[in-house]
Length: 395
Image (tube, rainbow, N blue to C red; front, side, top):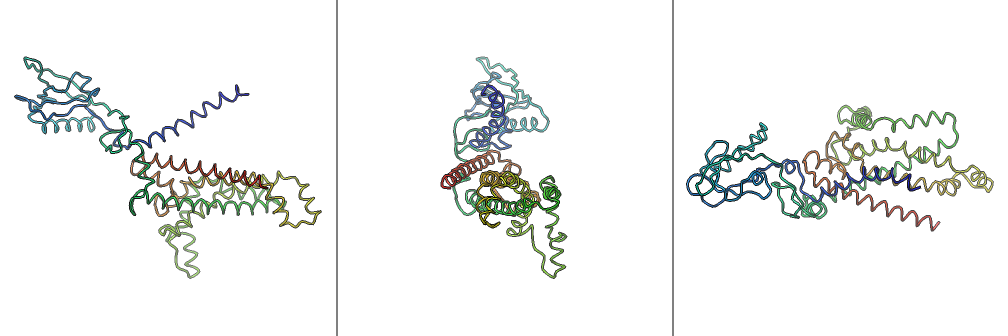
């Protein structure tokens, strides 16, 4: 059997595992857009004074200048034909060459050097190269290099340091995320269970009702989010127009944190209930009818059948649906982002991580956020499965 499973399992593990390992790796670096786009010549002016014209230079081992033959202690007299009179002048010429490279794509820089006993001059061409990754752990690493910073990103995220620190904001957003998940999953389950019970009674036109109730799930999320965003518009939205017609004051749906939370929750419930309904309905229809007939003969009421027959036999399906719903809702980025139009009135961990990635270009801290979210969901899933198994054993 393993001969058939492994050929399919290994590529799947590679496809899933490589992005995951890459994200975890980046979380231990200081990767930002500026860090990744660092270029160098591997040469800098030395503090030693040169006799005559020119400036002593120091070169990085293995850098572009070193590979081109320039070594530390070489005297540079000209850069691209311009004379070098002092170390500050050399720095300005190097910065000028870097600007030409980034703006005009001129990669090569010509250094005129003076070396040897006769102090003969020679021209050496050096091309810009991307700054190599530094594997030495350094928690104080700044934006001038790209390398390992150890647990610095995790400390910034998880350790509070003042009211406005990233750590304090993380726990505030984590609380909102947990509340968001509990509210949505609870409403998904209760409404989905109610609709599944109604459709399972054998009412006429059940197939039509099922198709109609599946429409929110079939519509693309961004279309539904834009539609609900318009319904919740503070000035022209349907709900505020209706409230004004009834003589009530309009509600700041998308500008107040509490009402925005209500708005995005309503949108996500509308989108998520069909999945829960279909899942629970499929589980109900798999329950043998003989059990209900036996319970009816024993004088069990409909509420008793629900309590003693439907819900216990529906438990495996419920556990899986609730677990999947919790994971999806915890990471439900689309609804909150699109309904708010990219605003941050209500923020969960997924939107905060995306904001770090997209707006701040802080790829390392965004990766650390993703790793923390993964760890939280793994821990929750393991605890949830353990508790449900213990409950099944007790039953």
